[in-house]
Length: 199
Ligand SMILES: Nc1nc2c(c(=O)[nH]1)N[C@H]1C(S)=C(S)[C@@H](COP(=O)(O)O)O[C@H]1N2
Ligand SMILES: [Mo]
Image (tube, rainbow, N blue to C red; front, side, top):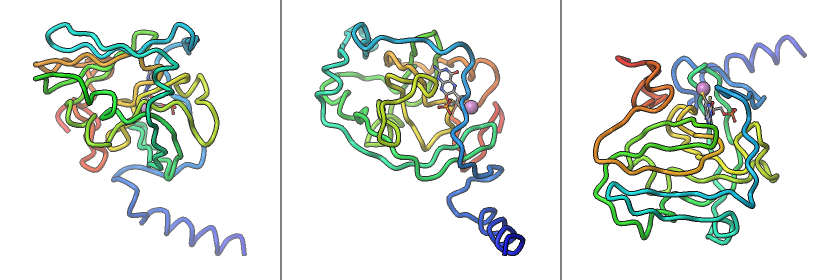
């Protein structure tokens, strides 16, 4: 039974319509961090949205938790080629956070505790496509996966989902983040295999 069922699974996995080109499925949840895991105390945690005019909107940890939350089930695609399907999260939609923010910006530079940054078009953070996520699979988000809270933007490669997120800087001009400066794609659509600059 083992050999036959493994062979069958192998074929069905390769043809999984939820798997973008060049990716393979994993059941694990690998940890990929460019540096040490920052320990962020929720008592001093804050999330700041800074607009292009310098206006700052700030949320404390209790204020974040008091906002209406959502429980998205999404697929994760890492540029190192693993994909994990049907992951369960809880968090606040970025649309909710930005609802009362006046801006003419087209771009966002996301900042994390520890110094990591990543950029994306502002519109990719809106319309229910992105969350500030603080629970994973029914538990508080583990520090190595970005706890207390991380950005979750599942329609782009996972490097855009900044762990230990601390704020969003709204910009009139695009500005590359950590991996984008190192040669990774500015946008990072897994379905178009936009891994590196020029892809
Ligand atoms: N702050 C921060 N966020 C980060 C990273 C990082 O090094 N620092 N790595 C990114 C990359 S390359 C990936 S693939 C995912 C990995 O998330 P995980 O460790 O929860 O699997 O986090 C992204 N967010
Ligand atoms: Mo990654």
